[in-house]
Every structure is written in structure tokens, then in C-alpha cells.
Amino acid sequence: MNNRPINFVLSLADTKAMSQYDTHSVRRLSSMADYYLDQAAFEALLAQDDLILYEVYGIDRPAVSGELISGITVLHAGKVGQEYFMTKGHFHAVLETGEIYYALRGTGMMVMETPEGECSVEPFAAGQVVYVPPCWAHRTINTGNNDLLFFWVCPAAAGHDYGTIAKHGFRKLVMATEEGSTIMANPRWSPR
Ligand code: PA5
Ligand code: NI
Image (cartoon, rainbow, N blue to C red; front, side):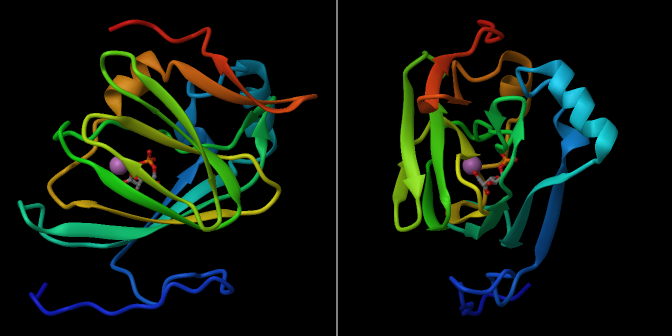
């Protein structure tokens, strides 16, 4: 890895979206056991197919102070029971680090919360930017019928703490109801 400027294209039309990347990771349904509220629906869907829920393309940089990493996430459309496909969500391992999200395509929401229990659910559709302040856990949810594609940038040294959310959940869920996308308290959320 050198220290030269990087230039790439974010395409709004192309499925591949990013003209250049170092990493490509794929998250399948099987990697999200226990993340969704409706366990029976999860098992039934998994029995049909281990679907790809989302893919992350990233520009890698050294995990040191001053460096930024960036990339694109493609979050596919679908539901587990009445709950929309979503990212795992995480705090940053270095808690006091923020992140910028910019939605390129699709319709969704971002669910965020602090360790103290402050919550925010923000609309996140094409054209919208969400600033995730330091210390806020963040998850993206695709409430639409097409891919939700977004660009993100954060400090390269931020790292990911998945364990806290995997164990305790987010306080808020977004479910599909007759009224549309509905924010509700997560009945499975547990205090630390
Ligand atoms: O750094 C971020 O917040 C994003 O790049 C996410 O990692 C990405 O959207 C995938 O979500 P998660 O890491 O929660 O699986
Ligand atoms: Ni993050």
C-alpha cells in the first residue's frame, strides 16, 4: 500500500457501483442468527436459501490515526418475517469515532444509539447524508423494494465492536406493518 491519492468513481447506475476497491465481503443470512426478532421466520427462510443480505466494498488503509477508510455497502431488499433486511450494526471499537454515511440509491433508515440509551432513527434514502457522531452504534435498514446503496467514510483506526449489539440488540426495531415502516421498542433488547 502506498501513500498516493486514490481516485475512483461511484456510479449511481451501475450495479457494481465502485470502480475500484481492495476488499469485498459478503454477509449471508446464516451469519445473522439471533439478529432478527422472528426466529421461526429466520429458520424458514434459511431452510430455503442462505441468501446474501448485503455486500461491502472497501478501500483499505492502515489502521492508524489520521487515515480514513471508505467504501460502499449494497444492502439487498427483503424481510425476515416483518423485519427488513438490515446490517448487523456495531459500535466502533474505538468508541469515540464518528462516521459519515451517504445514500446513493434506494430507501431505508438508520438506527443509532449510545451506550447511555439515547436513540435516533433517521430516514436514509438516496441523496441523504447521515452523520453518525462518536459513541453512537449504527445499523442500516432497507425499507424499500430495491437495493439500498450507500457510501461511508470513517477513521481507519475505528474498528468494529459487533459483540455488544449481537448480545444486547438495539433498543429500536423497524418493522413492516399495515401503516408502513414502523419504529418499535425491541422486546429482546437486554441491558448491559
Ligand atoms: O463502517 C460502517 O459502519 C459500514 O461500513 C458498515 O460496516 C457496513 O455498512 C456493514 O455493516 P456492519 O459492519 O454493521 O455489518
Ligand atoms: Ni461504522
